[in-house]
Amino acid sequence: QVHLVESGGGLVQAGGSLRLSCAASGRTSITAAMSWFRRAPGKEREFVASIVWNEDRTYYAEPVKGRFTISTDNVRNTIYLQMNNLKPEDTATYYCAARATNRVEYDYWGQGTQVTVSS
Image (cartoon, rainbow, N blue to C red; front, side):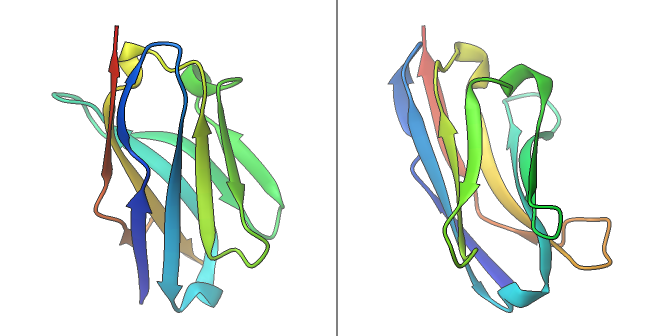
């Protein structure tokens, strides 16, 4: 099992910045990728960004490209999401997720952290 805990959410004005953190514990060696997703009120959950270990690459959803940056610490036990130039439409609950090797689905999820951007 992999246990994920997010932190860093809050209330910020449009144009401001926040940094989310996701601490992973347990069998982290089985993870092939870690990602951020978000769910806004009344909307489906959507992909935000991911980092894939064996590719050493990052991926971003179009709405956040150029504004958000996903990164990790040296031991890959924590991932971050630096969010700059935040917009009201970024308001959502943000979830960290981990995908195990040879899996397509994300099996491990954090509890979520709320980000609210005021206009």
